[in-house]
Length: 168
Image 1 (cartoon, rainbow, N blue to C red):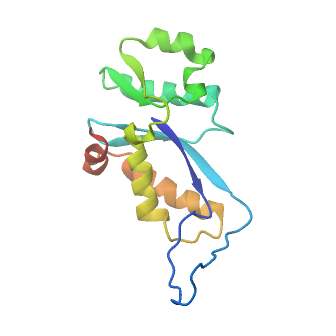
Image 2 (image 1 turned 60 degrees about the vertical axis):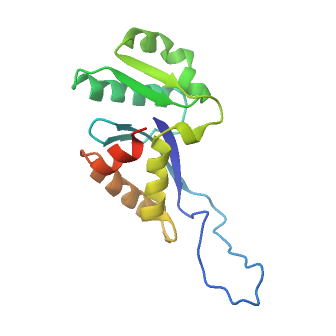
């Protein structure tokens, strides 16, 4: 499980530059409009579970997503281990009692600090950016949201791409 931001104006671009120009400058729009999501992949079937938080990432929005994950896992009747980073709101007292009540069938496994490369969901965000967002111009934030939501909807069904990508 992790959270991600997709910005309307990307941070990478490829362009042809005449050889005499040593240091090209590529200006972006002065605004940094973005959309945010929580996401997790079920390793067994490769389904992506996502949620757009209302407002910022905080303890309340994290708790809502954790409950959504729990409901999705309860249907299958299996033990769930969620690999999660050490963001402060993942450890929040707001949902501490709820997390304890879910044990041993729903467990959060916290990664060491500053180790995003160990979280398998990071590979999903990278793949989405590479396939659909890099080197593309989105005139409006709504167009970016449409592309991201369409890909998330496709990945919400069982698929081998995410299952293989996130298997450790």
